Amino acid sequence: MTSISSTVESAQVGTAAQVKVRNFALDRTRTFLTLVVLVHHAVIPYTYFGHTDPKSWIGFDAVVLATDSFFMAMFFFLSGLFVWPSLRHKAPQIFIRDRLLRLGLPFVIAAFTIIPLAYYAIALRHYPNIGFAEFWWNTITVGPWPSGPIWFVWLLLAFDLSASLLYRLSNGLVDPINRMSLRGFDRPALFYLFLLGVTAVLLIPARIYYGPSHWFEFGPFSVQASRLLFYAAYFFIGAGVGAANFERGLLSASGRLANSGWTWVIATIIPYCLLWALIAIKREILGNPPVLPTWYEASYGLCFVAFSAAILFAILAYFLKFNRSGWSILDPMQADAYGMFLVHYPIVLWLQYWMFDFDLPAVVKAVVAFVLTVVLSWAATAALRKIPGAKHVL
Image (cartoon, rainbow, N blue to C red; front, side, top):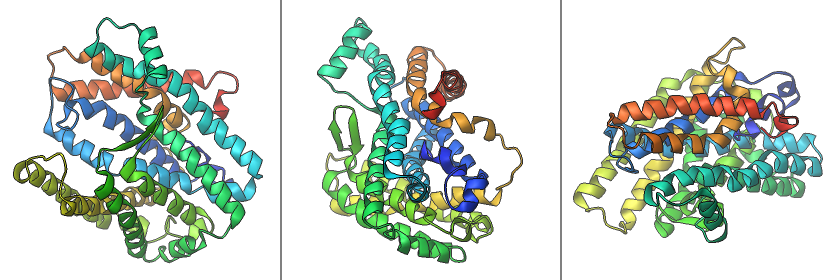
């Protein structure tokens, strides 16, 4: 993940200057987002959206609405930042080999091991007598074969391979985006409007056509249908921003974005509140119909992309402003963040399964699930990375 994996290269790949100097702001942003993923999965059972536990708390609905609306798109944006410099400095076969090693291999291993182990905890709740071997075989041969959070990994690999092809066809394809990024040094609002416009055009029609809940699925390969082009836009816009002159563009630590954090916080709050207003309309006025009116899906989609873009800018502004070479609480976790993303899902689901019958408040269950998931997934990743050759993958 920086992509979760590509951002591990955030300190190593880029312009000539970037090769020598770590970008602490982006390293810490990636690690922060990894923790957001863990928070998201820790609280879902205790919400209205995914109420699979006897206990719930409305505050977690607020968390899930926010996280679901931005964090994966932001990961694709961060991943895209380092694609064009990587393609410039690596031979095509080397780039593809590296991507297959960092993304393809973990996806295959996780699809056959980590994901079935995670969903076995859910299966036991409905079929207490089913054995893991039987469940695993049914998952692999009959299905459904859910991908859980690792859908991100295969889709990122697809975007990377597409970028490699496009770069060979014309290495200047993202130059217009890069020029806009340079203008964003002084006027980040213009880049925000560009990001908002592109993602609105790509997401709103897809949401109207497919609805918010339809997924393209083929075995463990799945992706939310309405968001496929939305994620692609974030990835390739990120590629444009990172293509060249990184330190003089939108994400410069001395640019205006880094000094306008509170502006973007306000810009985030407005569409977020509108999303809640639309949810209230759906529940209280429309009566939660199975198919929502076109005007509703279009309005929700517009607020969704506005929130996603604004919170992207708000988070980046914060980390850019405090881009220091000194220590951060996020730094010790940085090298293990990708591995934590890969291994955390069975840990959090089994913790939730274990606590299901406990008569504890939802907040206590969620905090326990989050803290133990962080500790155990971090420890598991650190142990795995000691295996010879594992650091090239994790």
